[in-house]
Length: 608
Ligand SMILES: O=C(O)CCC(=O)C(=O)O
Ligand SMILES: [Fe+2]
Image (tube, rainbow, N blue to C red; front, side, top):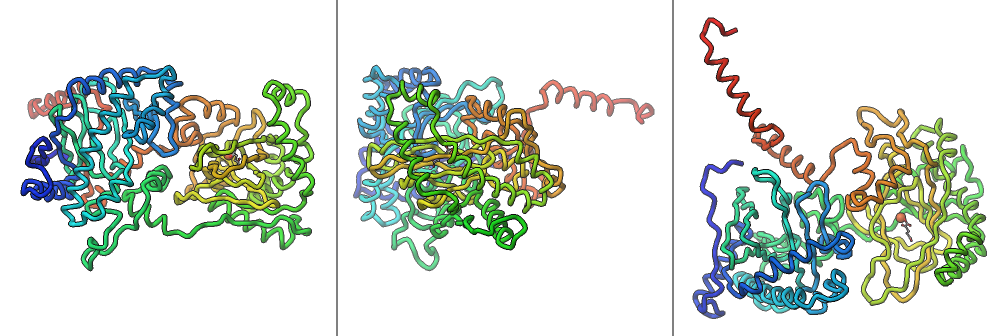
């Protein structure tokens, strides 16, 4: 890691040069240089003096200061359906990093929407300067992209690329490090974009890794930019691959894809762990449209110890290990009850909110018969799970350890024709959740390999999901899937969830039969109440998985996984590596050598 060789010099392109116009020789040679820089270092430095000192001040002092000083409640309003496009901060392992994302930043509407959220009273100067800045940088980006397309001889595709591009402006802040040592405030990563253009205040800190794995610290003059190739633009040529780029030597490597899907993939477990994001993502897209397993619970003979029971049990086991979820048909449920549940649910939601509060308290929604009928399904499923794991001796304990919670949910008709997030991605904290919906779809479940699949149940089916509590109790055997609601169309969605919740005070702890060398205990024992209390704290809401953060016995952070794969690679290849580890205080380091020197300096006869 320590570099003995001199770090490579980055290409510097002077975009202020009048000669840099299409058709000139300067243009042509620069196109080649940029391509070369992208292919080898993934970035170059652009001199571009269009940002006036005044605009620079607005961006780095006025705007940044105002933004980062906002109260946290305001900051978190900067949400985006696209991961990492909204507010990012308060992350335990990145304590010094904070960022805001402004999507569609080259349009006044994009900037205005963001500004209205942050400053409801308005902030014209923020809007004006951010828009101006974005437009200037976008112009630079257009030029770079054009040069790149030209260097590959595919200019005809440039227009459509430029048209399909939207810009995200991110304000980033890295707090002053607390020590004098260099500290990593943002782990190594590649950008999920086509190109990223960075502009920074005079504090340097950005490092890039070249293809031969050297890290170069980028020092760039104040009126320059760093232009980086993102994952969507990889050295093996461009993703939306043009025919001209495919030949025998360079067969089509990646399928064309939409950028949003790539970053969504990055937000999944598989994506985050991936060492080769684009490749894994494209492979992922290849998988066919998956349907959740559908399991039939309406057989008359479905009683323990029968053949049907055992058949259904093995289907349940398989589905829950693989997806943590399945579609259940269960006809013990009278159609009339199905209808009435949504009617009364709609009536409830339609009440004025004052009455709504009162009515829920005084005239409880009559969900009793619904819950009672459906708890039968829950108990069958739990019985099957315990049997299939060979821990039926815990049956009574488990059945007696839970209560039921019935929740009615309404998702308003989307305002626009775009997909709207009705409920963001989460795992349930329950043991089991059984969902029923009116005929408006929208539920999506994330598969273990990172694909969102639509779950579109029919009127006589329910969706059964494993929650964190049962996932932990089974020591990870049953998967608790992430799921969310995406709304599209012009109808409101109603859903009803029957949640099987551990009783207050019940300690969720995997049975000893499920813990062995091959299956070490994954989570420390916890009670449901302390766990949900944590999951509603700021930390609980910000982290990837409240369960992992709260009860994990295994480190499983982004940084951990990145370091793990570096360790693995180094040990396979070299059997050794150089480790940075700053937990040993400098004075201890010094004294250890001092002592050792003293020992060696002792006269020979005294040495033992
Ligand atoms: O409305 C739905 O289908 C999903 C609801 C849900 O996931 C929840 O309430 O936890
Ligand atoms: Fe849920």
